[in-house]
Image (cartoon, rainbow, N blue to C red):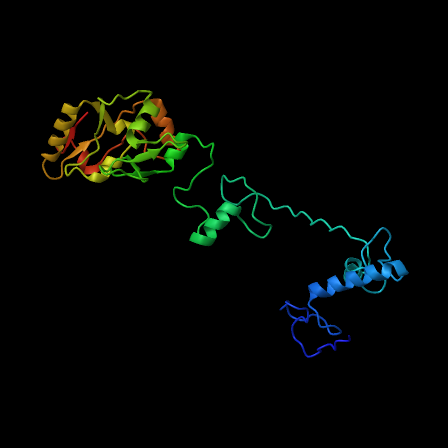
Length: 288
């Protein structure tokens, strides 16, 4: 029995299908249209009415102008049914990053920095951040030096990294080896000494008011190996000193490694030339 087609339908006329209608000359969705087309071609194949793609070795069904859908789209977009390989992008020399000491290639030919420094420039306005993390194979002493600032008042090497609850610097050794006190670690590295828990380091650069900032000093020539009793006595003497009296730090380097470390990283030299008015014999008392 003939069932008239409802050309006013906006959805697929297949029972149970609610997809949108696809096409102008039928009232089916894309899925049911393709299914009905394949069924129709299968019925016409034994009668010799099947028509396939004219491209050799292509078994896809005919779509338009003697071609399947794939080769038809390729013909109208590229002018040929052959798949053209993509032309390789020309390699433009990018050069190295403009940041001094960085050998990474630039992010692109029009950018002056590598990806890491360009990201810093976009986020913070400067390509190099203070205390920026260095390469993974960076020596520990060089990594340590990036957290030091020079204090020309007493020639201290002040730690600018993380400090503990007592005001002393903490240095992370990395690779799961934990944290150590910064001044004790550098003292061992530059003097070759192995400090036991019974050995304490007394800061000889502490002023009369016991400025907490001086606890961040890590310069080996400003540190003295003492026991707990001597450390307590030195601290009490500094607190009882008259107003304006400073304790002059040691002027003699602990080792030549300390001298080389100061020269390499542009830190105050172990030999202190003078401390102004505070260096007179009447106002200065040596702790060491």
